[in-house]
Each structure stands twice: as structure tokens, then as C-alpha cells.
Amino acid sequence: MDFQVVQDTINKIEGVINSKVVSENNEIVEIHIIANSSRSPKQIVRDIESTLMAKYDFRIDKNKISIAVIQSEDMMSTKRIKLHSVAVKTLLNTIEYNVNLLYDNNEYTIDGVGINTQANRKKLIAQATLQGVEKIIGQEFLFDVQDVIVNTTNTVSVVTVIVNSLVGGHEEALVGSAVVRKDLNEAIARATLDAINRRIDKITA
Image (cartoon, rainbow, N blue to C red; front, side, top):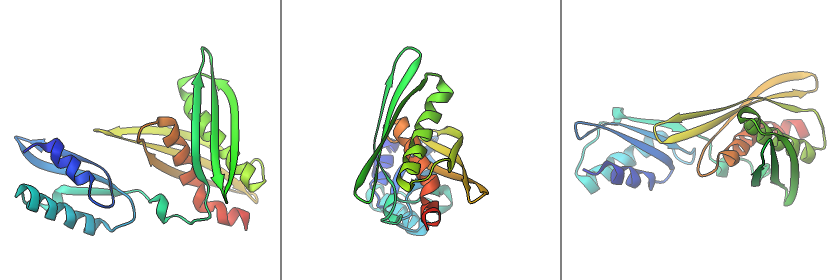
């Protein structure tokens, strides 16, 4: 059995973002799934079982399938801030960045220059995204980046952004995450928006 082909087949199942098939002695021992929230994990597991049986005549123990659910952008409120684009230009000691956000059919742009260190590069994109959010809301000094963390498991990388918010004297830590698809900077911006989008309605109320 070609496990890469099996993996590609699983990735085509509705609700699946990415998958990793772990094999041992030419047998599937684990299947790790990252899925969006459009379908329940039980539905996805049933589809995986049915697909493997129908296409490869292979019966998988459902207990070998683990699913991590990341909230789908489509399931968010339609009145939410969306990422339009991220552009980064690296020079010798500096990094130029440009983040474009969309909200209520309007585009908001934040650009700037910062020191080109590995730690600062990640925080600059997250901070620029937050500045764009503050621009949209019309209030300054609401958010600050506490940390940007990149975790890689097998073939999947996930960005987690921790944001400190200070609204009405109340401080709160917000956490957002996003799968790295093609561009790390884009994933950082999406994870930052994931952290704050759930609070936008309360802040603007």
C-alpha cells in the first residue's frame, strides 16, 4: 500500500485540512488529522473508515485516528476582519512589511520597517496585523503581541499567536492558531486574527 497515496486520498475528504499517515512494518498504525469545524470528528472518522475500505480494502481501527479541529474561517461571523495579503521584503539589517486587511468591504493597510532578527520578524507581522485591527476599530493601544510560536509535527506546521488585550481596564490573554499552508508570514497574520476576531463584537459594542 502506498501510504502517500492514502494520505492524499484522506486529504480530499470534506472537512480535512491535512493528514499524516504513520506506518510501521508496512502497516498503518496511526492517522493524524487536522480538520476544520464544518463537520464533526465522528463524521470525518466514518468517512475515513469507509474510504479506506472501499478504495483499498483496508479496515482501520477508529481508535487509531486522531483529529485536531481548527475553527473554519467559513464558520466565523460574516462581520469579521479578514486577511487580504502579507508582503515582506528582507534587507541586510531590516525587514519591510505590508499587511492588508479587509473589513466590511473596505481595505486597511499597515506597513513599516523593523530590525531583521529571527524573533522580531515573526512579531512584526503579528503586531502589524494588530495595528490594522486597531485602525479598523478606531482605537489605539488595545492589543500587544506576547508571543509567536511555531510548532512542527511530522509534515504539519502550526502557528500559535498569544495576544494581550486591554479593554476597559480589563486585561486578557487571547490565543489564535493557523496551519502554515505556503507562507509562514501569512499564517502568523491569520493566527493573529484568529485570536482577536472572537472579541471584535464585544470591543466594538
